[in-house]
Amino acid sequence: VAEKPQAPRGTFDVLPEEGARRERLIAQVAAPLMAENGFGEIATPVFEDTALFARGVGESTDVVQKEMYSFEDQGGRSLTLRPEGTASVCRAYVEHGMHKLPQPVKLWYHGPFFRQEAPQAGRFRQFSQIGAETLGADSPLVDAESIALLNLLLVGAGVKGLKLRIGSLGSPDERRAYSHTLRAFLRANESQLAKEVVERIDLNPLRAFDAKDPGTRAVMMRAPLLMDVISRDGRERFNEVLRLLTAAGVSFDVDPMLVRGLDYYTDTVFEFTAEGLGAQAAVAGGGRYDGLIETLGGPPTPGFGWAAGIERMLASAEQAESEPKAAAFIALDAGADAAAALHLAVQLRARLRAPVEVELAERALRSQLKQAARIGARNVVIFGGGRGQYDAAVKNMETGTQQELSDLEAATFVAAIAEQLER
Ligand code: HAM
Image (cartoon, rainbow, N blue to C red; front, side):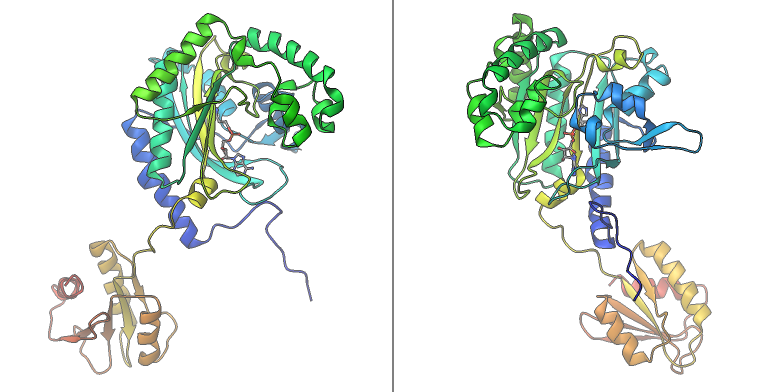
C-alpha cells in the first residue's frame, strides 16, 4: 500500500468548524476593535530577505540561530519564512516613508508565521498571530494604551485566566552594561548552571532567566537584576506606564526577571499568560523597540507593539456555540425540475443571507428528509412529486408540520417560500 501523505511535522489543517472560529475571531472581535482604536490593517509578504530577520530580530536569538525556515530561491537570494511580524512592519514603514505621515502610525496584522521549534501542545511550526504596532511615538501612554487594547482583544476572544507580567529592560546602554555584570555572575556560578545556559553566556546571558532546570533557577534567584540598574528616568517612565495601566483597569504583576526571546526590545516588555494551555502558557507578548527602525536604515523612530497567538487564544477560550444551521434544504421529489430548485436556492441565499442546501445526490425523498435532519436544516422545501411548476411543500423540521403552497405565480413564488421559512 502506498504511504499516505501527512501534513508536515508541527503543522495542522484548519477544518471548517475551526476555520469558522478563526474567522469570527478576526472579523467580529479583532477587526472592529482595531478600527475603534485607530489601527489600519497592513499585510506584508510571508517571506522576506533573510538579512531582515538577522538584523531585526537579532543574531543571538534562538529564533535566528536555529528556528528560521530559510531557503535560497532560483536567483540565489536567501529568503526566510517570517518568524514574526515586527521586523516586516518596520521594514514597510521605512520602505514607504511612513515617517512622513502624521505620527504615530498605528498598524495591525494577522496571518501565518513560521518557526522550526520542537513541536508540542500549543507550539507549532506554522502558527498564526494577530499583532499591532505603534510607530513614531515614545510616550508611556502608547505602552499603556496598546497593552489595554491587547487586554480587550484577549477578553473579547474569551481567553480564560489572563495574567499580565510586565518588566523593563532599560536603554540599550544599560542593557549592555548589565549584560557585562550578568556574564561575570554567571561565570562565577558556572558549575551549577545547565549546559545550554553556559553555552549562551557570551551570546545571550539574559536567556539564563528563562531556563527551566532547578540548578539554573536557584542561581538566578540570586542574580543581579536589570531593573535595579535602570536609570532614574527609565524607572520613572516604567512607573508611569504602570500608573496608566492601573487607570485603564488592567491588572498586572511586575516581573523583574521577565525576558523575551527577541532582541529588539528596550524599556517596557510584557507577556500575557492564560489558563488551559499547559506548558505553553504565553498567549501574547510584546514591548517597546525604540532602536529597531534605525537598525533597519530608517530615521530614529520609537516603536511599541505586541502579538497574540491565535491557536493559543482559541485553545484557552470557551468553545463557541455551533455554527448556524441551514435555513432550508431543498428536496427533489419525483419529476422535480432541478433548474427551478437551483434558481430558488440562489434566490433564497441572497434574500435570507443564510445557508440553503439543495439535494445533490439524487436520493429518494425519504433519504433526502433524513439528510436534511442530519445537517440540522430547519425547513425542507419539497419540489416535484406531482406538484406543478410553482407549487412546493414546506416542511418545518422543528414542529413536523407541512404546508402546501400551490398555484403561486412566477413573480411571487420566491417571496412566498421565503416568508414561509422565516416563520
Ligand atoms: P512572541 O512572544 O515571539 O512575540 O510571539 C507572540 C505570541 O505568538 C506568543 O505569545 C504565542 O502566543 C504565539 N507563538 C509564538 N510562537 C509560537 C509557536 N511556535 N506556536 C504557537 N504559537 C506561537 C513576537 O512575535 C513579537 N513580534 C511581538 C511583538 C510585536 N513585539 C513587539 N511588537
